Length: 104
Image (cartoon, rainbow, N blue to C red):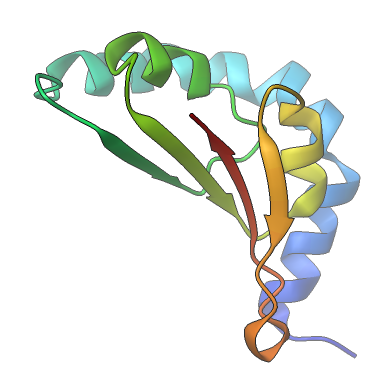
């Protein structure tokens, strides 16, 4: 049996499409206000921790069009929903199960 964190990640992976369709639209408007308030001038790297289904990645790309953008999430199923053009890989150390998406 896995850790509590892994069990939660597994649930989010299985429910990723529903999360993207139902919950992301609720969270996104509030989070956009946070993005609007950040100082984006000269940003060349962005790390979105807990990126989920990547709903904010296109917005981040608009604010920092020349930056390398990396989204990290414990649930690979969430990142699968994020889809292309993002490249993905899973970090292997100690079986962390943390998945990463990156765009240039």
